[in-house]
Length: 280
Image 1 (cartoon, helix red, strand yellow):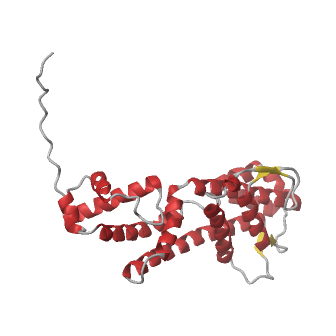
Image 2 (cartoon, one colour; image 1 turned 45 degrees about the vertical axis):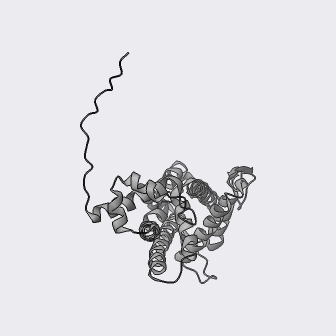
Image 3 (cartoon, helix red, strand yellow; image 1 turned 90 degrees about the vertical axis):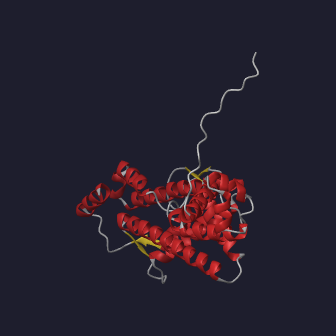
């Protein structure tokens, strides 16, 4: 045995970042950390020193930019809010490629009114199951929902206004995405918004988003909401299928707004148009 210690290799000097680079690396590192765990109603679960280590920047440069932890977290909230549109747009809408695959496999169902209704219900059922499970498991969605709760706790001022403006952009983007999806769904199945209701597809999207979000918010305390159960034919369809409460709620909401368009004639020309729509 020997008491000699292995010689350390040459030390590697840490690169000196500009103040702007330090600030961006800190915000990026904190965003990554929030992405791993999700945002809580406060940011107390994030350690300022942990963010500095994650960012790999000099403490002196960080404290020069943010003398107080609260100043950094204010900027982080703004950064999270600015990224909210991308988070909100990631989920919460019909997966259109999945819809095309499902409908292509059952295109013969378009030949009858009952077949079209059953296929439409199946599209809504599968889409709602997929969306709920994706949102329920997503730390990005938990962060997005927590941002709304955090916003409510902010005092009046520039920070509150900036976060509110960013969240408003995210909500409009999400709503527009859902509305476009359901417009295409209605066009595919020859549906229209019920004329006795003063509604638009944007309003339908708002109702659907609120319904799904309510289930996502309640699910941590009510794990049974995620359970699937075989149910007998519902919504005028035959046979059994797996339903969860979110799928029932979203499908019921969509069907209450939509009805077959009497101006659509399901002839060979229409069926050919459906095939073209599915191929686009």
